[in-house]
Image (cartoon, rainbow, N blue to C red):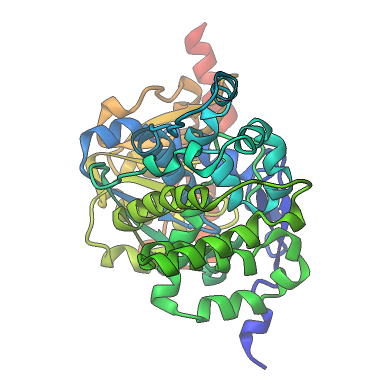
Length: 464
């Protein structure tokens, strides 16, 4: 029997507190994503500390290395941040022009302009299958205005998007993931994050799926459909709708003649905003469809041109030597060091740091003293990542000292200088986790370093 039937038998999806989907591992009896919010974690532990805005100002081309891509939240959040901070502000600043309107209609339109300029607008909802039943409840004012306007009054034919004059950095993402099936699932996960600022734009999933299909053709789709996880937990995934939407996006770019364009718009209407799913008439007309087409064609075309994503399905220790780039940002999101230390060793982090630009950063959720010791041995400056309550949630490392805004505390340094800071070792970059852990235990037993309690006691005595 084909192995594909048993893809992902040891994982199950679950709903995290922010509405996004996380994964639980039966093998490790542990979760891969924070229960407080899988997508929130990606933003708060990786994207925001990376200070993406300053990197965007300094470079015309940005390289990101995502170690242990998983189901893609870190890379997606990174791209989503760029869309919200740069692309939408430059691309979607125009507002629809309405001619020959009465004062009454004009006053109503004042309350509807944000429908066209906000990311979570009426046209976004058209492609958001989960939200379509609420589409015109949220945009009720637009509906009432549309019902009073004729095609000529609407004047949307004067409203066009032009992405040709928008310059955004070229974004190159190299994503490493041992579990190919995680990556294949990535564009199909239903992401209903309650935090609107974190919610992933549809176009990002379509870009990821497009890159995968370009390289692996229908194999991606065939395997996803046969996954036991998808069959058992189908409510967490959207395959049919995602494929249809990607087809529409590509059609938007390829269908330029009037007959094809008209047919495409007709299909969009009846698939995503038909009377079947709406409690009342929508009043959208051909000109409105043209507006929708131009809005999505412009954004998707821009992303398609400027984003390059390469996937490597192998042990990261074998992949790194073949990567020729230097990276501005590295996300290290491997499974917990105490259970899977192979990607947290001195030797691996040394290889990883060799791929950094001089002002690049490595970001990880781990506070482990053993990991921090490895980073220190590799010559990196270390800092701690904290939430608003001062609670640590990760580590930042860089060769550039000015990238560290919150240095390690005396307690953190004491941990590094104790037995708790003895690092994981893997000299040949070939040992399994069990061997690495056994070597660590032997080194702890023979080490002359103080225990953590004694090291911390010394710190407190010094403070007194």
